[in-house]
Length: 127
Length: 127
Length: 127
Image (tube, rainbow over all chains, first blue to last red; front, side, top):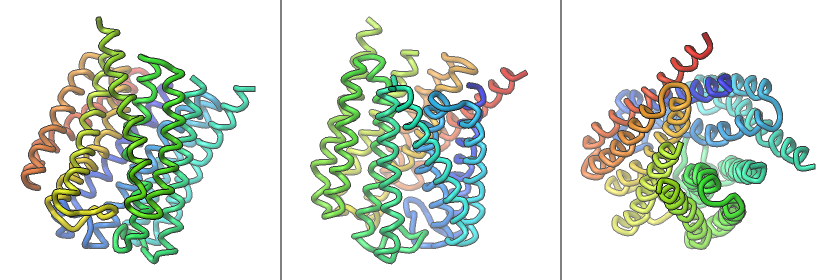
């Protein structure tokens, strides 16, 4: 369980860093709060943070239920891939909108495996 | 507990589908990333996903604490209503902004019962 | 554990109130759904809710893991500070964009202590 807790905390630290990057991008691109639109360069930083939020809300419960019903080791490894996928998403998206594709697909794959694997594990448990 | 895990995973799969619908709406309505505004038809798809995110962050912890402190069976049934409420919210909101009312009210009712029921259960536990 | 559940539920009730305030601000400032931009007064209400969502996704898992690996009492007290910090954030941000600073810094401090404390607790546990 310590392994899943570590994955959880590291994914959240990564997400917090994306939040700090949005704050710094506000100054650099001249987008004062409360605005979140108006400059596409800023908006890509903002969408990195927001899309990671959207992904985390699936990832974190999925991680723990998958670990409980399918495999702790596989959950841990999928967690490592998730954290790497979000770093790649940020790296690519900050360069250009097209650059987000690989990170987005990896994230989608991890979350898909976590959710569908959990459903399968729960069905097998029910039988 | 398998019942609550199933509700959790199904609510997240529904949310992931809303995310896929946003992606497909980007192409259909010509709203390229990173933009999330500019076309009201697209924005309704986007708000379905975002509002479901806002609701899930209340729903998931509320579901589990309510189950722990009040009733597993009632939590499970409220979870079924939540998933149906979000489907109705999406169906209605995609048609028109006014169409979101019924789904929004049902969601608010479920989350309200989960939170206030949990407070009550915790207070009774403390006495 | 009842203490952490209470913190969790109270933080979510506060967040739900911020959501209700956005709904009421829509009417007051004439920003009809699905729009979320166009009026800076409305946008500050909207950002209070959204930023609290961004903070909660770090806070809730951080709170529980910190309690598990470091200290239940410290987690509970940090939770009280978080709820107060979000109230101050809302109070200040609704007045002006600059007014959000104190609440934002307090929130960042709490979430930072929860995440870094958890990493430290997990490392000590591993040794």
